[in-house]
Image 1: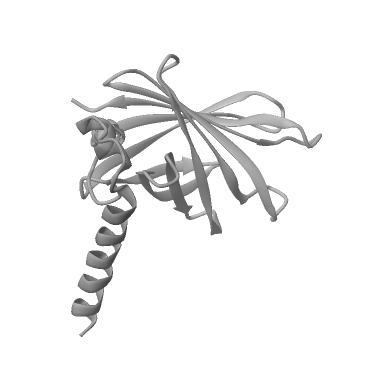
Image 2 (image 1 turned 60 degrees about the vertical axis):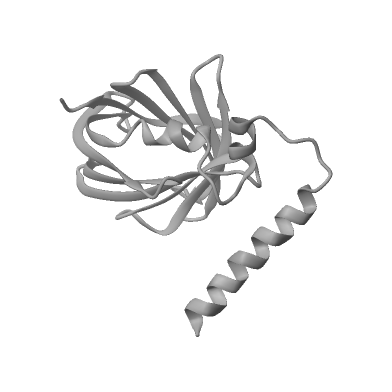
Length: 191
């Protein structure tokens, strides 16, 4: 019964979307795919390029301001044509650290997103944002648990210099309340 109900809901959604699009000019194939919530588009293909195993270096400042580095591994797997799942294993602030994220692109919001959970906090980090083609970077903003123990604003910037390297940076409130760099991770694809 649940399967039948789910099938009917998906079918009805598709019919409603089809009715809404009647009479509109037909978009080019790639643009149409980018807007269809039931079909993977070029934004999803961009995410799929990063499927694989990556060596990671976590870079952050300790309380004295000295740069600290630790090693980690990230495995990015394909989870349908729409999403990727990342499994992160390393050390953070001297403690074992495990994290899991699901990444995707929402054609209805026309934004990329990440839902991240890890071994440091019970609340997720939820971010949405946009791809900048000129800069070759993805900027996401949202909120998660900060050092205060409360929800705080966060911003991440992910740069893709080539298919085998990624630089990720996370910004959030500093001690003075102004945005500050919290940490950076440099990824190199394992060959």
